Amino acid sequence: MNTVSYNDLEKLVISYSTFDIPKLRRAYEYAKKYHQEQKRASGEPYIIHPLNVAYILASMHADIDTLCAALLHDVVEDTESTLDDVEKRFNKTVRDLVDGVTKMTKLDLNNKKELSAINLRRLIVSLADDPRIIIIKLVDRLHNMRTLEYKSLEKQQEKALETLEIYVPLAYYIGASKIKDELENIAFKYLKPSLYGDIKKQRDDLKKETKEILEETEKMVQSIFKKNGIKAKFEIRYKDNYSIYKKLLTNNKFETIHDMLSIKVLVKNIRDCYLALMLIHENFTPINNRFKDYIAKPKTNMYRSIHTTVFGADNHLLQFQIRTFDMERVAIFGLTSYWFKYKNNAKNYMKKDLDFR
Image (tube, rainbow, N blue to C red; front, side, top):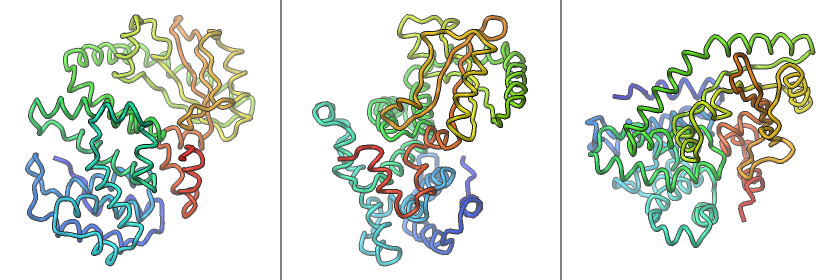
């Protein structure tokens, strides 16, 4: 059972903004009232679901209207509440967000013929004028996937396949890599549980084997950077289970996957990105065909970073991912990274960067 409460949500929101908290509480009370007779498959009160959706979005620093819409996203479809009443009690933006999520829910996203004929982004944008609708829908699916254990085996596999085919590409298009990665791994666990378990065990064994090596490498690089005036934050990472599975499908062996081990390096500006790259290449032997400069040439989903793979300690292949803190926010949350930075102009910046037309 999930233990997230409204107080947890409010505390999280207060930690990053001075939003209209009374408005947030009204949205919660409104949703709780209209969902009061409903239960989740787990037996929990239904309000647990929209509350968790709002909490996940708050962890991405979503704005107040998005949080209210997250709390209310099922009331019009599943209860006697109306869009007019939502607008009257909150505002037109919240109404439009709730309406957009409801319309997306009713889309026949399983119609593969339709999806192959029309670019998925254009299809969604034609129905969702505000990209925040897509984020709410993705997080709605994410929480449902997190609680998929309460569904039948048939329903688990149906939802897992649908997630991989529809929601994962959608998350990629808008740059929400954190959501994408979690959706992929949960779906993989339900679709291929035995293979998932095998890969997880190999990955866990590798983490135990290389933990000290990576920690020592991190300390060494930190010392080199400090001598050269670079302030950096480091994060040791291991390739996730589903990404490993995809690599193995292309005739890779577990031990030859070049980015199985990685150290993420976060610095304050682009100049430091390239200086960090130079220092890493001075101290480790790089693999020439494993270098990518996504800062000079970003990916289509706004991802920017430098990737270089080197021979690390004990000849382990080790990838460094070098980017700024701003690039990191976009890399993790995609469109959501715009909400807090641009406030009322976020929508225009998001549409511009994603070429929504």
